[in-house]
Structures are given as structure tokens and as C-alpha cells.
Image 1: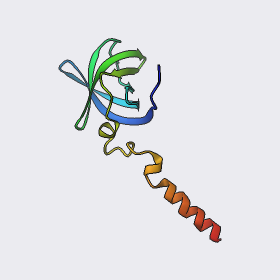
Image 2: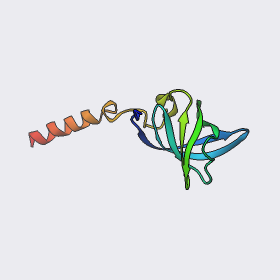
Image 3: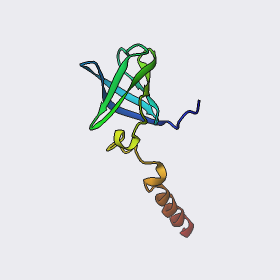
Image 4: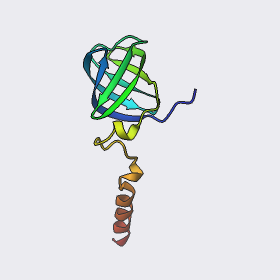
Amino acid sequence: MDRKERRLTALKAQMRIGEKLFEITVSNISETGLMAKMTEPPPAGTEVEILRRSARVRGSIVWSEGRRFGMKANEPIDLNSLLADSGLGLKQSDTGAAAVRKSWWHWSKRR
């Protein structure tokens, strides 16, 4: 099985199980699933929906241990939609960090 690249996060979201909503913190995410934390995670096999702003991700719990659990998504996760407004949707190279390093390097060479 080919594991997709995971992005570390600390996103607050909600998880729907049936008609009930629970507060969760998403710890890492990939196109195929996520790991999150909550007080009492549901057992493996539970169908859930993760809600964050306008993003919706449906899937099933595949494992739980202590406060952590893993969810496999039914369909590929739109990372940009789920990570919108978090600053985590962009890779470091997209944030201008390279430009900052380059300008610092030029500054240090002039001294």
C-alpha cells in the first residue's frame, strides 16, 4: 500500500456521527485520510463526517487508541479546501520562505 504524504496540523474541526457533533483536533492529514484526537474516539468501523468551515470529508474509523484515531476517507480529500485559512495549505516553497532566505543571503554577502 502506497502511503500518501501527510501534513502535520493542529486544526480544530467537528466530527458528525449520526446526528451528534463532537469537537476534534486533526493532527495530520493526507489525500486518503487523517489522524485526529478527541476525548472518546469512536470504535473502528464507525462511519463519520469531518466538518471544517465549508469542507466536508466522509469516511470510516479504521483504528483508535487512547484519545487518537485514524479515519480513511471515502473519496480523496481536497486538502486546499480543508486547510483553507489555516496557513497549512501551502508548501514552504509557496510561502515566500525561499525569497526571504535568498534576500538574507544577499544581505549577508554584502557585509
